[in-house]
Length: 182
Image 1 (cartoon, rainbow, N blue to C red):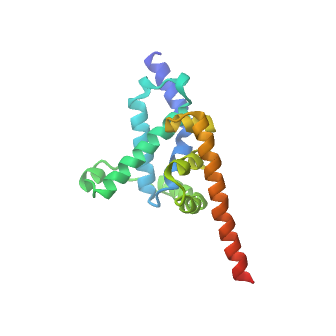
Image 2: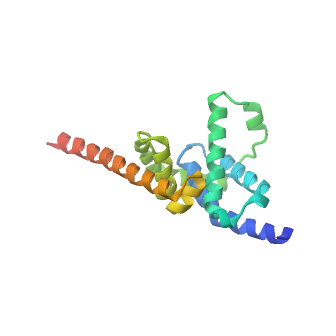
Image 3: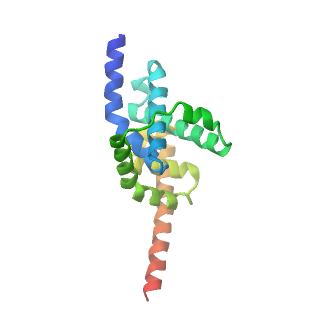
């Protein structure tokens, strides 16, 4: 692929996925600046490794969600360790008011998703990731399997188990609310 063809292909991938990737981070973060930074970091990592992307091995969405997961994991690890605050702030471009308002709106729109993530926190990590990628991230089970690097059958099993456990949690909550009303 020639450079201009590769750039055009990446631009299409960016446009098709930037909203989903920023929503992925908006479900995890309440700081719009951080949502913007993590989204940007994801696409910087993606463009620097775009030459290795192989559409035959999986969709662009699953590839990007894999990068986003690693980006968020690296951020979480830095946060736990205290990170290098000067380094993180030093390279940060402040968002203008329109960008900030857009990200705040996305964060607000993802509040139900964050509430669901709180309930999902009770699930085992692998099941939680499966539910999140398929039901919140909009990936197909096949794409989610590719993003997590697991066989499709394993993904289907994780989704089935996770949904069963999640239904039990929701049923327990509804039963508790019904008991309170009596």
